[in-house]
Image (cartoon, rainbow, N blue to C red; front, top):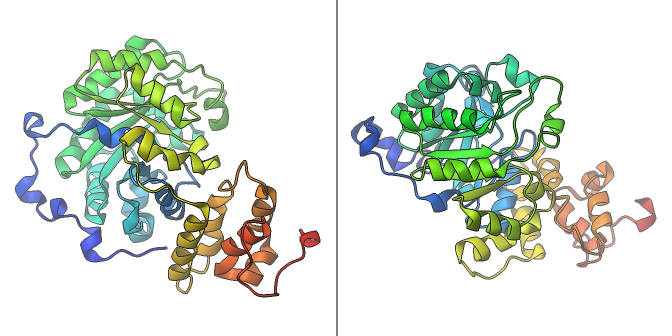
Length: 370
């Protein structure tokens, strides 16, 4: 994994926390809503540092999120490993899971000291494992506890502290329920809410089913923006394309968070900067992205040999919709290919997809081996 220097790990805000940190809500600057205009969702087992570095090659402006890290894991586990990231990932947020205010405050300090731009509290994950740890979506049933957690984190750091949540839990799925939840957090000082517009059904549905079965109620997010106009409302749930993102923002929210669509069809991220931020820089090419990610792998591989497969697994969708995509995915899924080509696996897979001559001379696999 990429190590970052002390200068990169500790922001100037963190270094001067004691002088600059204010606990008075009125003294805090409201966050700029553009910061959450387009976000890639935190996804367990997916949005690790390798994935985020890949996504950063595709968009300069998209806000990236870590996988959820529990506050107990930071207290008792390998903190440097859990908080690792590459300097190119900014703007990047760390999502925490937990329900102990003191522990979350300490975790938030470590997040800030590592140099993250935001710390986010997970109040939306519906998995049984998360429920047993007393965090995730079940916390929506205890808004005062969430407010205490938020205030403890806010008072500990100077970076943005945000909340990601559902619109309801089980039978508590009226607009009044989520409005009161957000209202409690707003009174506590929170100004950024990432709203997954499905309820979490904690009884009887798997996490996968919770992403598909509860109906989308996007009107709840628009109502929250009307009721809390000073808050940043970022909509999440079932969003597939950048054109859809553009339309949803036009309807009245500040931003959108996209999850699986961005992971499975990552090339969509290449249109984000121009369409949503007005930044018409030279478009990325797949070849340039592959070159950059190969350089990234080579930088890490001596110390972290697992980074080759760990990085390539996030890039299976890079050629989706193009001729040769099947050969690309097949190569990146074959252990023999990794053994033969090591850090050059991406170049070889691209060549086998028919897009560029291989760089490995004649030592290549025949097509019928795949």
